[in-house]
Each structure stands twice: as structure tokens, then as C-alpha cells.
Amino acid sequence: MTGRLAAFFRRDWERPALLVLYAYIVAVVFAEVVRRFVFSYSSVWGEETARYAFVYLVWIGAAAAVRERTHIRIGVIFQFLPARAKAALYLFGEVAACLFALVALRYSLESVWTSIKFDSLTSGLRVNRAWFTAAVPLGFLLIVMRLAVSAARDFADLRAGREPYSGKAMFADADADSGRD
Image 1 (cartoon, rainbow, N blue to C red):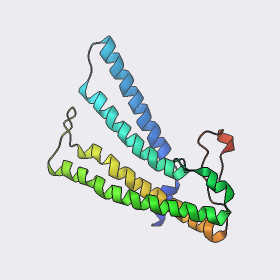
Image 2: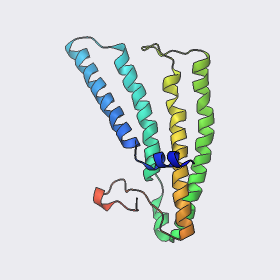
Image 3: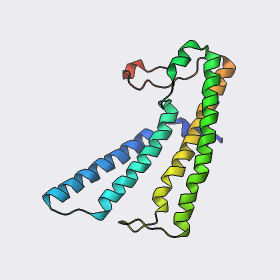
Image 4: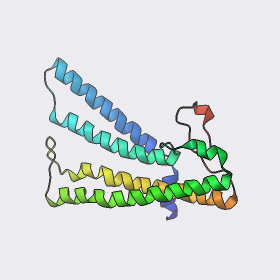
């Protein structure tokens, strides 16, 4: 990876993006509920844009979960392993996940190309559906990039014999986060 690209993926840019998308979804759904029940009117664009924003939110959130290692895993195994074995096991998982993500990226691009080729339009907004189906390959691309950064970090930890970054605990206090930044 080039220096600027690596620096970009080391930053935590997903959280602000997730916050913006989430706030947008809440605002639009609230406005649509008020419109529907107070004014007996609803817009075509509101529900559709909120749904597609949710799709982007999920895929960006998946990449953020890779960064923080908050995806579901069997963590009890890591308690009994030395630092080098942990790093090697994390590397193995990252390589396997990366292979899966690359295959999924390739196949998810087909729906985007099909939408572009046949000028498939959304039902309400009447814009090309490719803008919204692109969320899936974009999500897998972000996951691959996050896995590459994690793998580089874990490889450095493996070579140095350091304890690898174990991620943040999903249900623990914010002060009790494990691992290092």
C-alpha cells in the first residue's frame, strides 16, 4: 500500500460516516412517520433513501468491525496461546477472510455491472440502481483494505514476538478495552 492510502486506512473514518448515515436514517424515518400520520402524506424518496443509506451503513460498519476486531469469534482459544501463536492465528483468519472477501467482491460487482448495462432504475428515485448496489462491493473492498492493515500489524507483532492487538471487547466497559491502539 502507498503511504497515503495506508495512513487513510489507519484512521478511524468509519465512525463519523456511520454517525452521518445513522442520523440521516433517523431523521428521514421520523419525518416520514410525521408526514404519514399527521399529514396523511408520505414521500417516495424518503423510505427508499433511508433503506439504501442503511445498506451503506451495514457495509461500512462491517469494515469498522474488522478494524476493531469486533466480529464474532471464539475468543477463549486466544486465552491459552502465547503471543506469537495468537498473531499467527489472527494472520490465518485475516488471510481466509480476505480470500472470501475477494471472491465476494468479484461476484458482487456483477450486479453493479448489470445495473449499469441495462440502466436499471430504482422505483421511487428513478436513478440508476448501480449507485445503491455498489454498497456491497464497496463494503467488501473496505473489508479487504482493513484486513490488509490488520495483517500488516499482526505480521509486525509476530516478528517482534509482541502480544497482538486483540480488539475491543464488545460488551465490556469503555475503560476495560483490551489490546493496544
